[in-house]
Image (tube, rainbow, N blue to C red; front, side, top):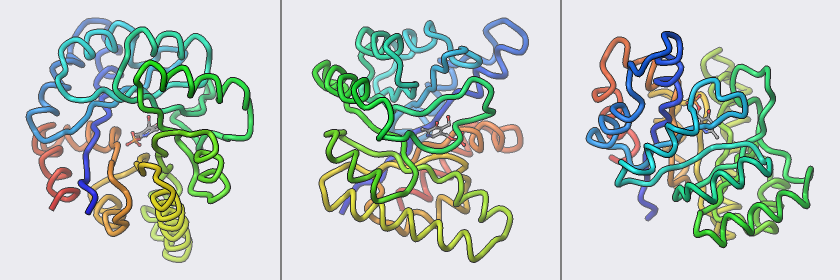
Length: 243
Ligand code: PXP
């Protein structure tokens, strides 16, 4: 039986902080609250335009945390070099477009292959576990296996959108794609994580897929915290995932 874990993405604490240009709300304080409320790891996405998390946040988090730090980042030489200096426990490679509001779709593991292969090797040789953020497609899972990634993170964004829009047929189809990809990956010894757009309901549904061991949740956590408080939201998610 796989032990399920909760990763809390605190990017949007930094979004709020950056609006006023001072250190409130504090990203490191949010990480410590997440930790004491049941988070198993802290996730941050250092975007190339540094619109929320800054390199200094990543350095500070690495210093103060005693739980794994998961650094999401684009596949660029600059980011790979930063990661190998900071040495987070996990790196999740994601596609990145400057103008997108959030990560739209998974990484195409057939593009930029030479850099992708070299980067995975370099990160792994620095003792960083590599995760690839992909759409729930078997061909992508097969390619992740070939590339010797440690984990995949399945993009749950489309599923969550269909679910929120009450599109039963499409949400069921998307759920089945996630399930097949997770099963295939797990059979082939890849760790299976998931993330994007998750809230209480979608997390509870996805929990039925027993091969998924880690949930990375951000926007919903910070948004729902406006009403219920950060600690309460994380405790509730932790309960949904782990019970
Ligand atoms: N996982 C990955 C790889 C992401 O890029 C993001 C968004 O930064 C998330 C999880 C969290 O998504 P959300 O903020 O929608 O919960």
